[in-house]
Amino acid sequence: MALVIKNIKELIQVEEQPVLYRAGKDMKTMHTIKDAWLKIEDDLIVDFGEMHTFSPQITDTVIDAEGGMVFPSFCDSHTHLVYKGSREIEYIDKIKGLSYEEIAKRGGGILNTAKRIHEASEDDLFGEAWLRMEEIKRYGTGAVEIKSGYGLTVEDELKMLRVIKLLKEEAELTVKATFLGAHAVPITYKGRQSEYVDLIINEMIPRIGEEKLADFIDVFCDKGFFTVEETDRILTAGAKYGLVPKIHANELAYSGGIQVGVKHMALSVDHLEYTEEDEINTLLASETMPTLLPGAAFFLGMVYAPARKMIDAGLPLAMASDFNPGSSPSGNMQFILSMGCIKYKMLPEEAINAVTINSAYAMGCSKTHGSIARNKKANLFITIPIPTYEFMPYTYGSNKVKTVILNGKIQS
Image (cartoon, rainbow, N blue to C red; front, top):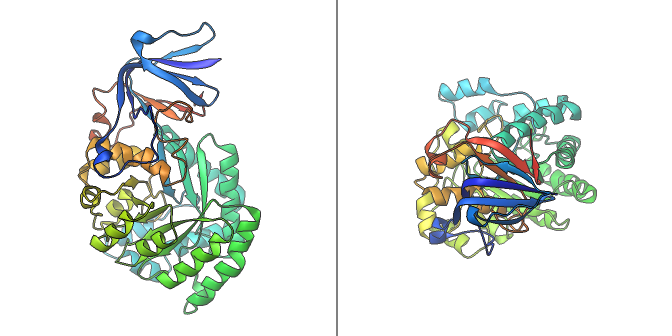
């Protein structure tokens, strides 16, 4: 029995010939069908068209979009949503003028959450993360990448990845897991950073690789965190276990993170507040997806990445939420879409591509997610009645999603 949606005011991000991502001038390209219908069988999109061609079968379950639009679900390719508690006290420190690095040096930031992860049970971590996933689902996210990196010991990193594995098994959302042991240096290794890198390489990565707990490997390659040389060693070790690289790069300075990421054929390099000609040229010669995290730049009051310069040079761009307790405590991808237009001066079509097909590429699933195409995963949402698709980024702060469909099933 098929599920059919009728009376769709406009079907967004339609592809007759699917692409892996859109880059440069092509980011302005976004196909739609007005006054449309769409058909789902099992968990796949099987057909769509204009309403005058609509001819449902007697066995179909038909739902009426009632003039709402249908979008492919957002793909959030960079989050840290497995954590314990919150860090609003550090938020007050930020208001008082302390920098990200100053808070970290005082034992705050990542190390604060690492302490709470150590003390929490897997059940507690799963329960909190499940509520966050339910929240982002209601705002239209259908695929999410989740990183470890708040464990910072062998057992606590494994604990986080086991929780992510369980989320992957239980959730309707598509979940990808990333090992981020190189997120910060634990207090116990202060002054002995090279020894902590050895621990990651010699103990963490082999355990994670053997237990198949992660799809990707990430390193915070930036000022005050991990060097290019250390990043190179960690990614080389991860490659032996088939862990595909993704890099935190150039959030705090021109760190060389983009270059080392491209050298290792990273799927994405993320943050990129500090990006100029050398970095752009390096990315143009690669298949690595530059990924912006507007929520973090907004929350921390940082400079914004030069998105227009990057697109005009011919690059693709993805955007993700960076959902985490310290620098971006929100997984609302509708807000990220709006930020693309408001702060990065992206056209609505460019921003929609950045949170759908391009962010799907940044988490390795653009063949199955990120657009409305036959035989792609039926992960989509129906909006409330809105006048145009440009209205989605235009009105920030309110939820325009009325109905969520994941794996072909209507979500409660």
